[in-house]
Image (cartoon, rainbow, N blue to C red; front, top):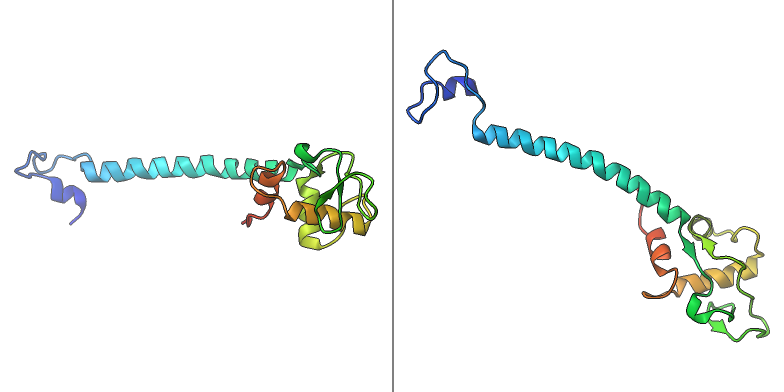
Length: 145
């Protein structure tokens, strides 16, 4: 017996036998929830793609604005400018995509020799919440599917 046959001729106000009935309110609600679920999936996928794109274009200042003018030591700490063995900051913030590649591939940042790249990457690994570039670097660490 299908759902339509069960709904026919019911004493609770269903339609008389032989007359088609609309789906019960439970089935109607399930259909509406399915439509809402499909719409949310359709809107989440572009949002995830947009998030992925923004992560790859985010920037990490080395050092952040609070430490502007300081050099980067090999361990990633900031030191006074001109410190022997430390590196001048890059001329522009580092791109998220470049940092991701250096993190996962182990190679240097583009256009930077290996030792300088390692110092910059050590600085980035030391970033803490509230520091410029932290959100970008943290989002690079999130797994992608």
